[in-house]
Length: 218
Length: 218
Image (cartoon, rainbow over all chains, first blue to last red; front, side, top):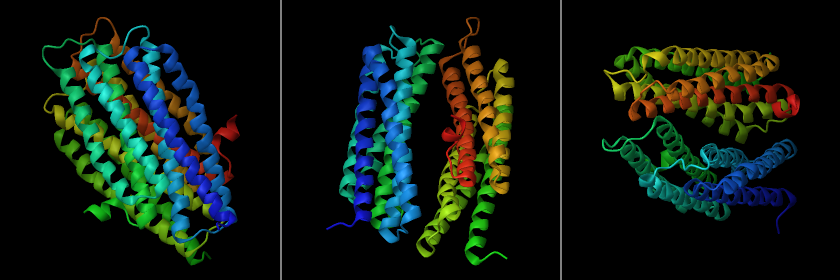
C-alpha cells in the first residue's frame, strides 16, 4: 500500500500525463486548423490553452507545498524536481500550439501554408504528436529506455525543418515576405515543440536512472 | 557568520550572477557581430557558449547534491528551486545569443540585416543587455521591487519586434525570401532572450516574496 506522500507523487505523475494529452490534442488540432484554414478550430486551441496553464499552476503549487511539508530524498526528490521541469516544458508546448493557431487566425480566410509545403507541415505535426505521446507513456511507465528513443525521433523533425527552408528558398518558388515570415515562425514552433518533448523524455531518464542523458550516451 | 549550507547557497547566487554576465556579453557581442558582419566575433560567441553550459551543469550538480544532503525549507528551499529555473533560463539565453551568431556566420561576408533594419536590431540588442543586467542585479541583491520593473522593459522589446515585421512587410521594400527568414528568426531570438530575462526576474520575486508575479500584479 502507498502512503499519503507517495499517493501525492502518483497524482503528480497523473497530472503530468494529463498535460501531455492536452498538449498533444492542442498540436493536433492546431495542425489541422492550419492546413484547413479552420478558424473555429484555431480558436478552440487558443481558448483551451488556459486548461494547460491551470494544471501547470496546480502542479507547481502541489510541488511547493509537498517540498515544504515533506523532505523528499533520493528518487522521490528527483520525482519532485523533474515534475517541476516537465511541467514547464509541457506548459510551453501548449503555448507553441497556441502560437500556430494564432497565425492561422491572423491569416484566415487565407491559408498561411502554400500548397507545396502542406505535406511537410503535416509530417511535422505528426512527429510532434508522436513525440508527445511517447513522452506521456514514458512518464506513466517511468520507462527510461523508451525515453532515450525520443532523441532519434527528434532528428526526423530537424530534417523536416530543414526541408521547409529548402522549399522556401528554392529558386523557382516566389513567396511573398509575409508567407516567408509565417512559414519560418511556424517551422520554428514545431521544432521547439519537439525539443521540449525531448527535454521531458530526458527528465524521465534522469528520474529513473539518476544520470543525465549526456552522461549515458557520451 | 554563515554556516556551510548558507555559504553554498551564496555560491549558487554568485554563479547565477556570473551566468548573467556571460550571457550579457554573449548577446552584446552577437549583436555587434551581426551588425558588422564580423565573422571572428561571431565565432567567439559560438565557441564561448560552452562556458555558460559548463557553469549551468555545475549549478545543477550542486543543487542536486545540496537537496539530497540537506533538506532546505522555506526561503532556502525557494532559493534552490528558483536557482534551478534561473539556471535553465540563463543557459537558454546563451543558446539564443549563439543562434544569432550562427546566422551571422552563415551569411558572412554578407550581412543578414538590411540597412533600414539595423537601428531596430541595435535597439533590440541594447534592451536585451539592459534586461539581463537588471536581472543580474536583482539576483545579487534579492531585489523583488527592481525585478518587477523588468515586465515593463520587456514591453519595449515586443514593440521593437513588431516594428521589425512592419518594416519587413512595408509595401515599398523588396526583400528576398532568405532575408525575410533571417530577420524573422533573429527577431524571434531577441524576443525570447528578453522573455527568459523576465522569467529570471519573476523567479527573484518568488524567491523574495514567496508569491508569484501573476498573484502580485493581478
